Length: 466
Image 1 (cartoon, one colour):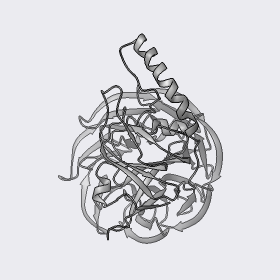
Image 2 (tube, rainbow, N blue to C red):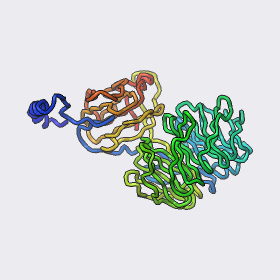
Image 3 (cartoon, rainbow, N blue to C red):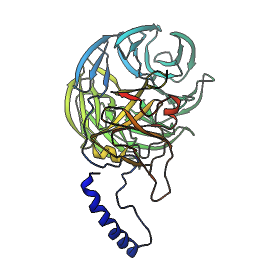
């Protein structure tokens, strides 16, 4: 807060106090608390220049295009196997996997160097892929089974329904797999026992599927029923079925899990569903020809839609739900796409601990800073939210409606840590919630899971690299 306001506030506070006490016995703070994370003192937002990368699997080009999201330009094409369909990025975002259905290979790509590491030859038509604890689960479309691959070797097979195409592991521990079968109901698989424990008939031709971060719900589209099914993934039961557009191909949840987006392959549109009441709020957002895959920017402001018949990517502004740009996919017939988040590194300078990479979402405008990590039920390992301001000022945060215990790391203009608030607990009932203010003026604030700073020997005086 600027110094010239202090004298004014000293006069105002007693008056405000008397007024409030006259009106009510409930005393409120003489300043506004911003929910969940950021309490802005001054200034607007700025951009730190990092946007992350988009990886696009091009089926007819048999390559992966790497798009720099800061410029929306293709920076590299990486040759992989023939008929690239599904694509997956590892939890630590160091490896990208593709299933190459025509050549029967699984390609692994170094996501730092953007180079092909290896190819696993399966000898079958592979499509969906999931990764759990360094083990890959891959759908054999025509064999009706899931391949279990570890150390680049097929270790086992799990018999499932007919036409396993997409596979997802239930977070956070991957103890259950859901398999979308083209020609039969969904298979619910226990990978520890390597067997199907339940079949769920969600509709005709179940296709792309996505979990909430806490694994409590699964969303799956049914291509020839033109519906989206919401499944309780603990009880393995359908909660609700929602009509969407024609021939839905894939569903993806926004980073804050407030909305689900569905690509409607048969009518060149995207549907948007409000996840609070499970109601469709935008039935037909026009995009390019043959919308297929979906990915989001780290802050959720943009949705990227791969158009397999147009060989391009539609970029949707998720506030207005309109296409704001169309960029080349870098190849022919783009299918699935994944986004790699921007990263920062925290460098301990007072110990022998190595630098720690954090995958970040960026809050660099007022709505994002007000929302922060509000209502999130989980935050990925080595993940965080970086608040970026355009000036140096004292920053105050509170934890109202924030469900995740956090460490708050405050940094100055030079990206030096000037204060850390450790193990800050959620505030779900107190009113008003306590605030946590920086000891010194800060320009950046990084929120990570509680315990992160102790586990990685991060201290005041250490640095951050962007």
